[in-house]
Image (cartoon, rainbow, N blue to C red; front, side, top):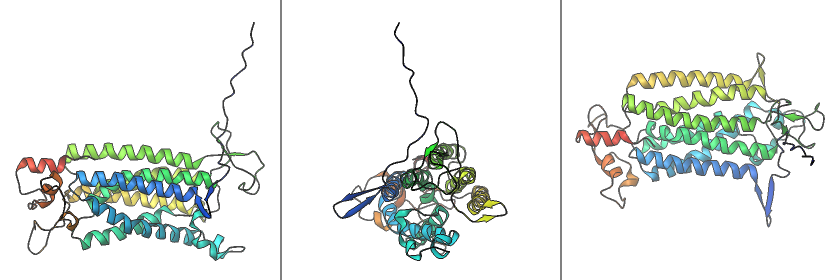
Length: 337
């Protein structure tokens, strides 16, 4: 009788053996590549969703050209200010502040700075911010999920020790003090990536429900994004063992996540009560709705008869609906991205 050898399933997640490759003298860093891949996906998906609302793809690209670098700067600044020990403490090195490829981007500072810069741009162009942020919300979660893979390559920001089958291996060069070689850790990068992908799907479903029930989204999706992301971040943050500021027994980012969640809840409720519509252009408070107050990037569009241009070129009514036929208004509200 033949003996059947048992199949041994892997009991851990290995960490990559390297995070940098060289193309001649130029380093290709996995962390940076993950961030760039996330940005590319977010811009592509946001462009599709924003165009479905009657917006311009050029507006999304311009917003990305401004918002992404400002967001990265804000994310780095938040990290340095909330984790100053590595840069200004004993044994710290201020020169590491510019070494973004080694990790250290605070999502809170990134989102706040990026949206602030985008809001400034949209206001200058006479466009409303809410439709763009509604288009961005699920795409932003996907971008964050892809970016978290960079933490895996860097072997950083992992959780507490675990005996679960999906424990993460950490090599000796990245092993924190006090832990024996071979210790497995919670793969918090994977937890957050999966949470964010599930959250993106949830936001798309929520958007469809809001459209069916109210006919508009009205800026509520970005507030829902804050609640979805922070609901996961607070428990994932609690698992982590990397150095962090502790306030009243909790890590600083746990408190931040809870505060941002409450802000998202208040914003979601307020946006719903305000009854905002999904119009792309900002109304002129002096002369009323202006059919010319559309995205200037669309002025030379190739397809003069396209639905997107028709929607943008139609003046808005007093309640944010288009002044055309009821069928026109249905088309404006019908795009679900």
